[in-house]
Image (tube, rainbow, N blue to C red; front, side, top):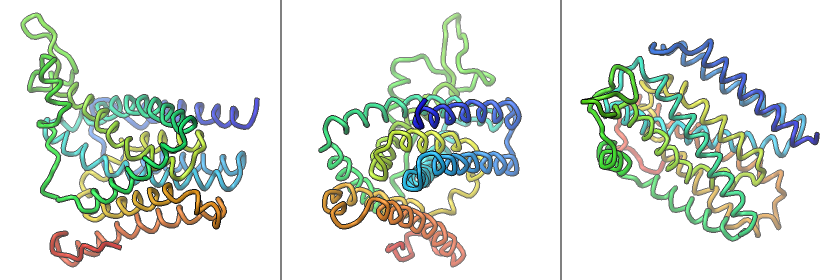
Length: 322
């Protein structure tokens, strides 16, 4: 068994044991999750991700470990961006707090399956057609620019989304949660509840976010291990992060701009890869990427907190974040 196989085996075992621990000991069915519990669960997933970073450093070396850490931070920050949309979905369909954990879990597990498929296809395409990386680079620059200049008034409306309208057109839906069930019988026929709709929408929304995150992580590393593990660890921590940040997420007014700058940086790096490789070693590139990601994310969060203390809404403050 070679080093790659051992690493994947360890990752798989850690994943199974962590899920069993999280579901069996840290999560209770149909119970609300307190801030304290969410903090413990978030600490658990972040610690696990960092422990895997140490393991990769020992088994695969410093450079790959730092690529993994950079990719994880990138994916983790994009996961925070997911939470904004998740909150809107739960509110729009009046999901009861006791059902949050179960609905999030199923949606996230579905998202992991889709991400594995997307990553596998994406890596295979890049291996065969290297020029696709340049398309990814252009896409990231465009996405980052659009995200940075997005109008806050253009808020996502879950009940007007294409996913919901598609489900409404082809499936019999009921406007309630069926007492916590996903499917019920009405007049002897099956009907799908709002909880079913929310689960499908969570998975679908994550697919949309994956269109940004997977090219972004490929701009940091081309190693399959890094791409798979950073994505999965970030998504698995999303449920606890939701409970931890749902009351405070509105305070991070400028996090989106911080993420946007990172996406533009990675996109430009992908477009100029040939020339960058001529003058800067791969190890230095990884250190620079890690530094830019950490600076932009921490800077945007601290700037958001500072502007909150000043009592200035985003539209009245300086738009040149960072």
